[in-house]
Length: 161
Image 1: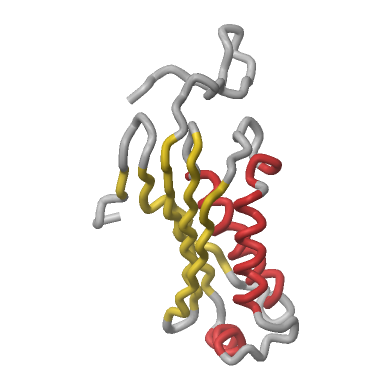
Image 2: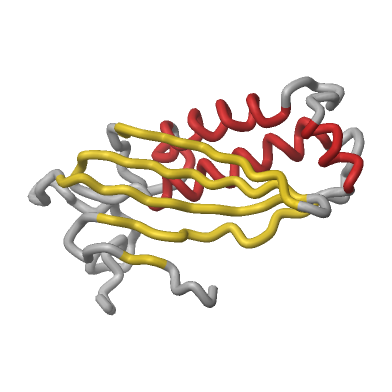
């Protein structure tokens, strides 16, 4: 593991890492997270009867937009040309929605932040669209599941996690 903090210069000031000399390679990341809610909120999402409309369709679009704009939200994050953003939702009993975001690029740096940002914004959008019915919703287990490509190679979260 690299013990050097690459986002700090010699004086300890924040800096954007120079990736200009790195070769563009195919990279991908998969992230996931869930929002837990009351059973009746999940039922409204499932039946598309939420007051604000089709919750998952709006959350999917929000997640894709967020992945594309991650560099505007996260300081020192590089803007990347994304080649793929795929968002999946799983409705889970008794009352949760799991979101998975798979993001890919052909670039000199990875897309972990884009995948994690997509998941967070999807969950926030679900909350926003359902908050009138259920303000007690909570976010859980937002995490990187895997990443591929780059100098550090592939990484996959151990199954026990």
